[in-house]
Length: 197
Image (cartoon, rainbow, N blue to C red; front, side, top):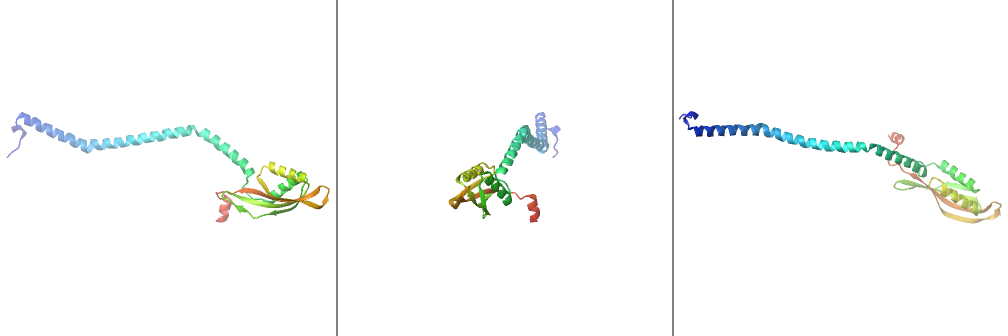
């Protein structure tokens, strides 16, 4: 049996032609166009995400001068706070400063003894036991000088006794504990890190 389109009636020939054409169009769509269309949709989605990221980047770049100003302000505040709460312990400097405050107050420091350092989470407490001679007025002036000092110094455990025998300008002896604070740096300094190696 021999198949030929020419032997079919005209409407069957048109139907066969339509059927073969539809199959060719479907095969072309399935093999080529659908894949390109999916890739195009994926690229369009990626382009939209990139445009959103670019918009966020441009908005952040516009705020850069404001951020730089905030960083500068915070660095200035940090420097002023380091004067109040320094990062290093220096017994000689503390002794010199407390002696200076006592001299301004006409108080005589008799003994200055560093105590045991108490470690806290972000800072260390460094107590100094002081023994001094002077008058009540001198002692009050000394405490006032300490309260105005830029570095944090807490004074506690104050014991005041009358001096016997009393001398001119020295009617009392006072003992107290002056505590200073040192900031504990969470990040090791380059010199300390090199020494640890």
